[in-house]
Amino acid sequence: MRNQRRLTRGMQLALVGLVVYGLVARQPKAITNGGIALAITFLPAVFERNYNFPLDPWLGLWITSAVFLHTLGSAGLYGQIGWWDHLTHAMSASLIAAVGYTTARAIELHSDEITIPTRFFFVYIFVVVLSFGVIWELFEFALDITANATGLTMPLAQHGLDDTVRDAMFNSVGALLVAIFGQVHLTNVAESVRERFFGESSRNDPL
Image 1 (spheres, rainbow, N blue to C red):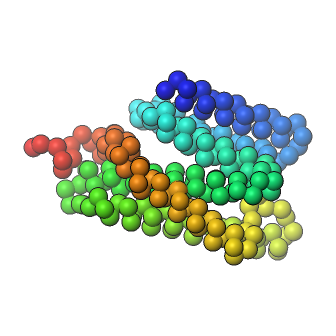
Image 2 (image 1 turned 180 degrees about the vertical axis):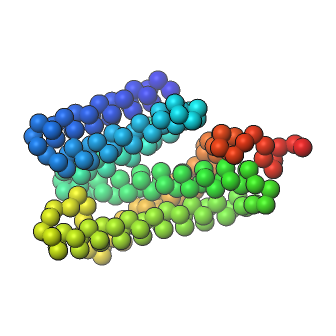
Image 3 (image 1 turned 45 degrees about the vertical axis):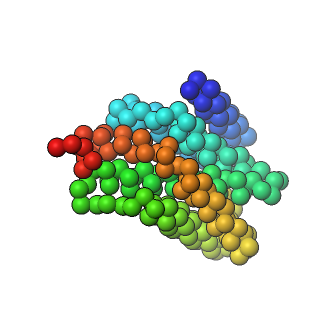
């Protein structure tokens, strides 16, 4: 637990350094990307403080790693390391899959009227991730249109059909990892979400 927290703090300090660099060098992109990523890394602490809902340090590290890797990519590694984009897509997709599974599982535990077969969760995770992937690609396409119309440089861009297909492939890899391994590790998180936001009782509790 201590090592996870140290790694998380180290990445947060690196993001602070990126924001400071952006302020000194007058680089709006570094300020924006670093600032947004840094704010996201504090979400677990916000949930614990405001909602009395502590997250496992591994989950905090997972969230921080995903946004940290993306921020490094936006800072130049996307253009310098060909596989960096694949890594960040797989990480982001796994995080979205985890959120989707946890939400659905918490609702199922709470409701007497909803029953989701365990095997269906495998399909559900894929559908959620692929849907978000489509939305993300449409967002990048919209940024391309805006950049062409205004002449502005956008923080994200599409790089052709091949790039879009590869993004979808690595999104699927992230979803697959969560579908295979995540259900066991995320069930306790789903139960905590149910208890905190839906109340103590569930259809699996004794009457």
